[in-house]
Length: 207
Image (cartoon, rainbow, N blue to C red; front, top):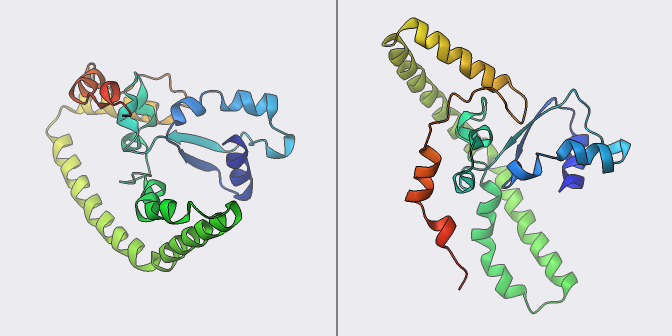
């Protein structure tokens, strides 16, 4: 994972990088330590690049750890309503490939899988003009609704309270990872309640 990530970062001249990974909360913790101790100089990430770790929305609630909101896409500015689960959706349309190619040799099977995934990517690429525009229009409408709702709620509250909350949010969002500022989005007991109401994490077993 480190090597692939380093190659991708070197390929793009961008200063802000959002890293969506199922276990970003574990992988990112010692990323810079591993980089300093084991990565070759050519793959080192310059300090000018800001890294933001995030966990896709389907996976994030299952972690249920304290201070885990810092990895939630719900609280990262700029991501909109992205869920970052698109790579998982590829498998639903390609599950049949596992059965239909399992008798092939390694080389033939690898080529068949590459062809199917390449075609999937091509369909996404040629459809971007239509899909992105429809999502952009929907996002504009949603933005306007949210702005009006936020303005109405803000006007109903005390100005000193709003100023305090805004300061907490700005400080938390600007803090580097791992965040140490007070989390304005954390509700005491909410994580415990979610795990109690969703026992899959503790009870699911492979038959």
